[in-house]
Image 1 (cartoon, rainbow, N blue to C red):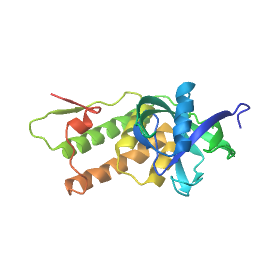
Image 2 (cartoon, rainbow, N blue to C red):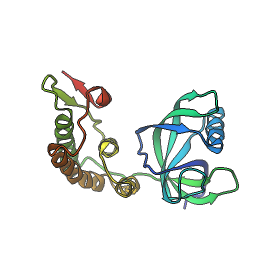
Image 3 (spheres, helix red, strand yellow):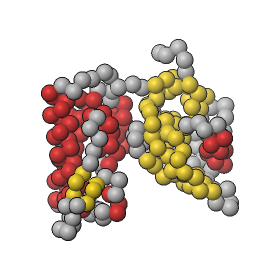
Length: 222
């Protein structure tokens, strides 16, 4: 355990937030509106954690112990006090202790860091295969004959794995496992068959077709 624990306000959700992922949140409970205002006042992050037991609203749910700290990028305030915010996932953390003395949960947390890795032949091969299969998936889902699709992913294998994971239609327990994994090679290896399965589902029209506008962050049409 780290000698220094960071106090981090927590927002439990029935969703997993990955590093480098953007998330839109509608805030209406007064406790979370207060939390967001405090974070804005101090330019501080808060943590998004998947709920293990309990509900998002009018409850103090039990969270999984690994989540993602996020930074508030945009805020829209409604006259009745509600808020709509856009956040960006930055870094993972592990909860060591929970403080329930506030209206919202506060976690005493330590960083979760990726194991050191080098671009070995296997990691390069896995990363390339993931990019290839993900490109096939996106091209099939867009299904636009008037577009040549160039799917652009970061070169860094860790970033690439999280960016692909955030897009896939996965159950929360699988997403949580990928979030908690600190081995880049293992995460890449787990993602490839998941992408391949979604290619099969997409070809069977199980996955909803996407528009180029919905994928503007991912693709460059030529």
